[in-house]
Structure formats: structure tokens, C-alpha cells
Length: 365
Image (cartoon, rainbow, N blue to C red; front, side, top):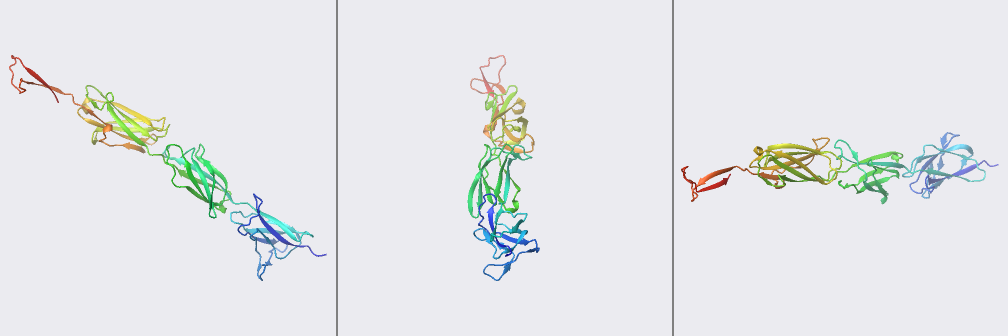
């Protein structure tokens, strides 16, 4: 009887698809448990010897010579996996024990390295000292691998501002922002990341901030019954109607206003503060107060406004500080009236109090 001997054929297959992996040669060693040494054979078509066996372009290798008989005698150890695949941690134990099969065939599977992605989309406008997630931001994800770029899919952030993509293989990726909620600026640059074999099984955490569209303020100051000029007698009612854009509904803001002499921001007549919480992104807010005639008689007055954060009033969102802005200005007249007596020629005269005065002229000053 001839001793049992077999050659070994190892075929590399993808663990998920079962298909043969033909790219990027895999490297193996064969460990003989009996001799406690690695198997050494001659390289095909050479006089060199080696203990490393490499799969060919078809995804397999066959040992040039046979292995001796032995049940569970050998270990097949992969020392280099194809690009993008994970090395197995455990060797494959096999036997040479068939009296009929000349070749022992092992389908050796590898799984692709894969990682999960967690992208957090946030702003610092809802709360200036912390990051708050933005829901409803949509991204297209693209993968580039070996010079080929393909779209992976479209993803949208949840109520917490988070989107997740699971089990992505190695490659270079880019999230392109496609749609965002109203009031935010769109990201100009993609969110790029790379997955490599050492990232297998990990969660790669990304974040990206969206800035709000700039807040714009337009104001109209009036006095009395929505007038621009007022003749004071008693208290003077003044108001400032402020139009705003791109505020966050439900967030508290504070308008800090000053009434100054027109053209003189250092001459402050009155300071006011008005807290409010808008219901809509774009709208109006009105500040009303009263002044006394002694404060503003004969003057033009102008409103200056600063919009600050309701949680941190040191944080300024917008300003409207033109001390000469006509739309922010009203004029208060000086209604002092005097009398002067003249004769019929219009000239001042000395009059006898017992004689008749022929004409009076009323003059305003």
C-alpha cells in the first residue's frame, strides 16, 4: 500500500457573496503540527524554496508537491489578505486523509473590512454655548475606490441631527449636502472621510456645522399716530417697528434699543430693552415708549437697535446703528408762541395804552 499523500488547493472566496476573490494575491503558510514547522516547498519553475504560498490571478494556489498523511495535522494560516479584506484570527485546521482524491481543496473565505458611519449635523444658533442637532438635512454619499466614483445612497438626519450608514467597505467617501431646513446656509464643501482595513467594526464619528442665514433688521420709527413729525403738548408716544429675517421660531431674543439725538450716538435720551420669542422666522416686533417734552422738544431723535441672545446677552446677533438713518428718525417740534405788536406798516411802535392798537402779528419760534 502506498502512503496517503495529497496536494493542497486553496481557493479564496468572499464570505458574503461566496464568489472567488481574484484581485490582490493572498499569502498563506502551512504549519505542520507534527513536525512543528512550516512546510517548505520549491517554487514552481525555480530552484528556490519558500514557505509562503500565493494565490494566482484566478484566486487560488496549488502546492507544487504533496503533503504527507495526517488527521488534523496541518494549519492553514493566512498572513496577507486581499486588499480590503480582514485577516482571520484563527487558523484553518485540515487533514490529508483521502486515499482517492489527489488534491485537497479548501475554500478559504475572507470578509470585507467594513465600518459604520455616524454623522452629527448641528448648529450653535439655537443655543450659543452648545451644539444642537439639526433635523431634516439630506446628503448624497459617494464612494471612490480604485479610481471609480459611485453614489452609495441618500441619507437624512433624524430628529437629533444624526444620520448613520452601516457596513461601508474600504474607500474614500464624501457626503454632499443636498437639502437643509430653511434659514440655514448650505455647506459649500463635502464632508470627506476614509475607511481602511484597521477601521473594521468601528464607528467613525463625523460632525458638520451649519451656519444660519444672516439676520437682517429693518426699522421704522414713528411718533404720535404713526407720524414722523410731532408737536408736543404732554407726553410724547414714540415707537419703533422692527422687521427681522432668519430668526429661530421659539427661541428667546432681546432687543436692546437706544433713543439718541440724531447724528449724536453719545447723546442718549433713553435706553430700552424688549424680550420676545418669535413665532415665525421672518416677522416684526414693535417697541413702544413715551418721552417728555423737556427731553426732546425741538430735536430730531433716532432709534438704535441691537439684537442679542436670550440666553447670553453678551452674544450679539445683529445691529442697526446708523445715527442718521431717516427711517429710524422722527422730529419733535418746539411749539413756543410769542406776540409782537406793530402798526399798519409792520413796524414796531411805542403805543399809548389808552389808544387803539391797529394790528397784531403772531410769531412762532
